[in-house]
Image (tube, rainbow, N blue to C red):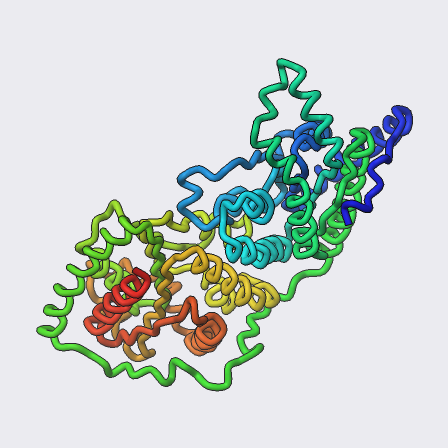
Length: 493
């Protein structure tokens, strides 16, 4: 397809000036409207070495308010980035609502240079197509406008530009042996680009191929594409403002016919003597495993969801009691703050993904989207329905990276919850743990139960299964959780 492009297209100086003056004015106005409408924007620039990415990015941003965009030049991942899933370093750079992120190279290095140069195995870059499409679809579904440009020049033109750069002492440093090696493998890169475009050119994140032999022609094509896409998105956002989203708590939508929670045996328990013996044994084992996790550079996430007063805090406390605090972090998740609300809801969780060799323990998680946000109406129906797929995709990416993911639902019955609430209420040292919100949530027990059942059904996958922990007996629950974590890490090791 790239071989069929007409690279001889040019634009005269007069044509260029007439077109660009109008486009610059439009782009400035559209940026202000996007800020007002809180539209996040991502612009990706990929292309051949010496195709002019830096020059064209610079030309684009001259028309923008610099307070509202960030340019990210993407180079080889550093050690911190290599110890996390490959999309992590891009997730943390995704823009807040109303801001623009411009990427000079991007996540597509995985299926371009990493592929051609053998940096990763074939199965890794092939899997990356699915992960990239999921990443872009999640952002687009969350309201992000994604524009992707590939700057195309011929092999002959690239050679001419390399030689021109080398002749000038001020620019000779920009061409090295690696650039000439890539030039020699132009045909292999051409094949990779063609497959990349075929597999990632989507309606929510389309590719625009820019004929980049003539700089003026390339500038105008990029501006026209950005302006047209922004005009369409601004119009859509204006219409959406006039059409309030449905925020009904439709917990019966897609209701699961049978309840997994009803089948849980909450009579399971341990004697104090059994508990003490097993606790000592497992706490010693988990400390030994923590060391092995670090030595083997194994990333681990342990997440806790459960009913109020089910014992999540006490469970986490026993899990970590003998662990080295330098090797783990407990991440308590509360309602999102103002900064977090301006990003895609998964952004704040991607930021906390542990690097290889470390353990992250989440006290509540991204499942809030399909639990409290669903039941309380904080997420629109289409948002929490979509979240099942988004969460499964995220967890698949984590486990593809080799991460051990352990998911606990800490379960008690309604009578046990009431008993614990009253116990907390009567104890001056525990009364702070009981809030008005806990009582309000209890009144919606059946609605939450339906949401939990559907969550367990739709997000328990072979790579990331749920473990329901019977917690009417706190002693039994603590031992089961410890044993489950130990088994999961040992199996991976």
